[in-house]
Image 1 (cartoon, helix red, strand yellow):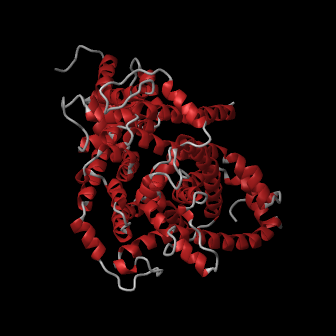
Image 2: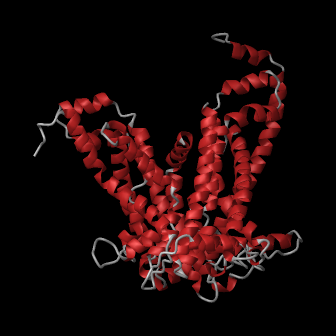
Image 3: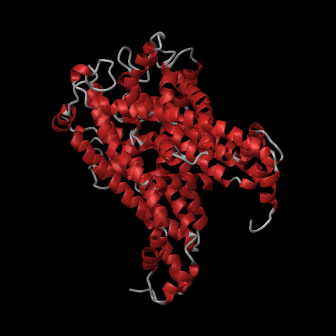
Length: 303
Length: 298
């Protein structure tokens, strides 16, 4: 029955709600309710294998706090490594990507081919390519050690060494994600009016000065956007560590484990789902912190 | 010279320009050298992957980059003796379910947020977008509990079903936001003219807004497909039987044996990566533009 007795405005309201019905149910039931449920679970000793799920208040958080205070614990290693991944990975990746974007921006010939090549790793399966890197890192037959030998340099243990494993995993992640940052930077560079550069050239500004006083400040929005996006993606690291470490355990000696890997192992291997939920709440808090910093930086820029 | 403007006036006079050119030339050579070097590091791992996939087992531990006796044995072994063809099918089905659903519902919701006024519009939109702030890792455990004891079918399970793998990704907040931005460009006059001609509200969406937004829907579809094809953590949790694994989960499981079957893993990786790479190369312009667009909006 056509609701002809409704005015056009009323009819549009009805249709808006009909169209949004499924998305509203989806977000309420699949996104918002589970997020609240995760908070709630972090207050319970939730184990799906046991008959009872007792309420324990903030015990899971107290446990998390005491684990972090210990001299050595898997949870502490997970948080420390995750912060190391962010602090090392984000700056290196963004500097590399910016350098590549600046070079790509000035050339015509072959630039599309370079762009595709830099971009390909980003669209390939992390698990597949992480296994390829794991093979490249192998002692004896791995490509990196073969190259080291050709250069008469000492062989390196890479993933087998507690000291080298984290940078080795990080190298893959930087390698894979660089193309994405290059594209964002290139789009940002295109937004800068050419006249600024022409004026700088007329004034006899050096390349470095042009970069320092024109490119860098005007690229600020892209830089902030990428800083936040990449920080969050490094905070959520999981797949590369699973693919590149023995049995996916984040070894050797927890040297590469991450917060999300800890969550996975606590929740789905030890079934300590309450404790694992408190870890995800901590992860959420970290990501929220990054987002809030971004919002304050962005709004300051507008003011 | 047809007109004299300040800019071309300077071009002919300024002596800086000449010096700049000579410098430019050196800078360009340097750029090409460096870019080529980086480009090489981008493709060498893929070449290594492909070459290992055609190496006989006896050559795996040798240090040659290219196989002495190339063979397709790894491919026949992977296809005939592992579940990889099933993983392929599963990945494809899940990615298609999510892509079709995202393209439809994200476009529809984006259309509503762009073109309709209704009470509660802002809070609903903000609620949708705020879900972006919650990392999916936080939802994994609730989703798993939900999957083990779902509302429909009562007493059944979503574990090891296509729906169980796909459901978290069938509508996305980022996609709705993108579509809303794009649909705001659909002229209101066109929609009103359609209303006068008696086109239904869904008809306006389907026959006016969607055709005008095809580039954005296309870019969104490609991203959604890629993202779901490569998704790992949720499919890892949502599947327990090898027949229901997706490709990344399956490749990860190859290693569970005592010795790492490098040749089989590289074959699986090649099969997973190569078809998508071809798709990406064909659509690279749309993908790169789509990413750049989200970056500028963000």
